[in-house]
Length: 244
Image 1 (cartoon, one colour):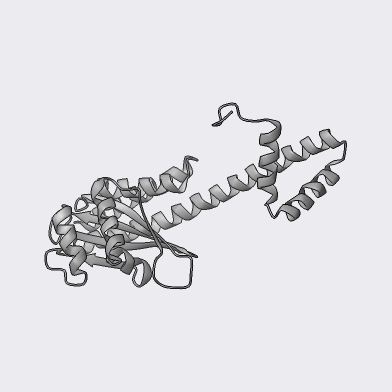
Image 2 (tube, rainbow, N blue to C red):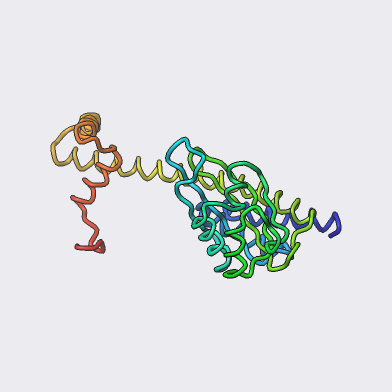
């Protein structure tokens, strides 16, 4: 692959990864789907792509929950399911210990023999790149690129994929910040509506209404935003909600 072609593909994939955020359709799921689609579209060696998310609820290195998302087909999801079944594999290694783990030949790979036997018998995958995408507290993620050919990934492809993963991590971080911001705005709006209901119902001012919400929140050990949502639903129930 020519050097100019490599950088051209990186630029195009970066635009794809960041484009979802720029267009305002910036959910985390959409960003991840853009990334895996871009990998299959722009990297000739990649036949399948997906994201593995691993969560843990303790300080143990052992993952307690594995989720496969943004898969471009059945193969990445099945590959993750097999990793979860056997509790080992390149995605775990990429997430916990390395930035990138490569399987050149699944028929000769000896690091995870049980997993490889299952992969060979149940999937078309013959070589894999697993690239650490991000680490965020108790959640970690890897971008997984699969080829149906033995020795499907050369050094240039791996370099390009690592660059894509870097752009993906930046885009994903931006998307998550946007989600948090929109969530905060929605929470503020709900609290404002709940204050208005209390002010009208009990003839109190805004400060007193908020104090009442805060006191009830502490008494019931329920977040103010959730309490506000319950109050709004009680006063203005959604006619389309189940049971309404």
